Image (cartoon, rainbow, N blue to C red; front, side, top):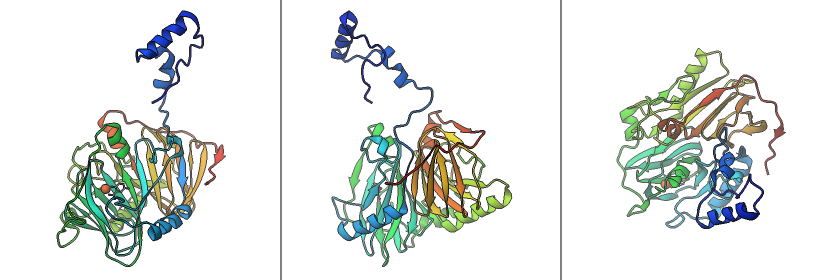
Length: 366
Ligand code: GTQ
Ligand code: FE2
């Protein structure tokens, strides 16, 4: 963090000014001048509410496929979402990496592992699998695939179409903890077990939590042993919940079937379904969120700014920013959040607000 000194005391002449100079030279800072910037009444995330539209992302992904090979060194063809509030750091929000990854026909991304954990939410394409510690997980649109911390992983496109998916990682959190480790696998690809989808065969469709507020209370430092969550099952869960309730939005959290905790100890994954012409209640929570529009169209109001969205768009809801969603046709939104980290540290807070926000601005994509 960088803070200008002194901020409150403007009289820096005479003995007081000399004191400030001496403090700075001694690598000390006077709290009385910086407390307002440190102990803020509510979080002041650097990330701003932002949206990347599919109409911008898709053609750029296609150009990258045409121009940029994947091999050792480059490793993965990934376009990271860069939040303009973060001064050029390649993160969607202060605690979350969000990105679009694309793999052309017959390509594969080299095997490696790292301490940050990752999730993949598939947007389009067919024929790709991600091998996670030897278990080849087939990927299709709407599927969620986990590559937990330190699991070897490589992506293979065995088909004739390009595939696009959203990557979410806890990288900024692990970086903030000075705990990033990365290692290449000895070969380009891991040998993988046959048949594919071992974890799915073992655990099946057990990894959903359908509580109304959909933030797991359970904590578990081990990641989910179930590595893939199929769209057909997610869809069925959402349909079942939607049929049971009058509210316009239902939310489920993907969970670790062994413990009921979040899928990764550092990342929570959610799916929201909003009925046609439906609106969610305005709410805010401590911690950042990245949303990916899987299906449908509508808009969200984030901190008084209106963001129109449709399938394939990604948008960021920074910590403590009020948000409400409105669907035009029925909409399915996927999201990731750092809530498991906040929960583990006793820092999670969430509030439902009384009234819809007034719209002060309309977001203009660049
Ligand atoms: O696919 O292994 O978006 O290692 C960032 C880092 C994807 C991956 C990302 C990664 C990967
Ligand atoms: Fe990776």
